[in-house]
Length: 374
Image (cartoon, helix red, strand yellow):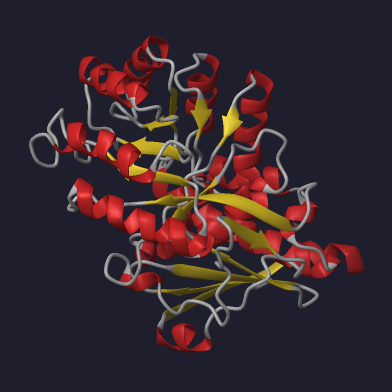
């Protein structure tokens, strides 16, 4: 009886503003865990959590989390899209934290890995910056934090072959290589900008400058277009951050649309569903370099995952954008879990995710609770 109480959900609480939504689960025995729904319109996602996820899971055991998440998917079969998955991620990640606290282990260890460091690349989100200015800020980060891998932006976001301004992409590719030197690894993200012909053209420029990672060159939903680029180039073509449908992931991997897969834990629906993508990729011999482009909890979740999976990519995506770009990611935690030393982030031995949400932030948030009533 004690074992059943330990895993059966009594309540789901959410604390949210427009951009961030934290989730607390409590089981019948009082065990608690904290997670997060996906960022961006998190207030809407928390409504989905309480209306379309909570009714199907409250009062049910969480010991078979894959089955529980599939149950939600089946009960809400008319809503197969992103918001439901982003809400499910809040439930999933809170349950993993609870399990870690119950067992006194970090989530990485529950997943078969261990605490320790993860190599990070400095990920720039900016397109409204000149190549020269981008190079200068990346060099400062290299010197201060020891990064030796960097990602910049090409084209314009979903840009229909149009650059942020004429010639910017052709300028930034060689500028970053020249200014940072040959001993760093360079990545670039096109954010669905290009048609296959233009993507291949840009890909040849990247190969000439020895870039190693070419992200989302074509509209991400056009897998055949992306495969054309992958087949035409030697550089690793990567993608998948937006995809939340497991059959789409299977198709993407089976057809070898990309060389490296990039699931986002919170877009996809949590750790458990991400592990299914990891398994598909492992079977196909593909590496996993997840998308995690802000410093809410998604980057911490990804750190734990990378410490555990056998086909982890070479590095963790680490956002370098601060309060000027993402003011909402400030002051979320009691202690900052994101300290970069010698280009690495650290997963600690603390149980669960090893963090405490700021009480001040929680006090300012919108609160909602769903409870088991019978």
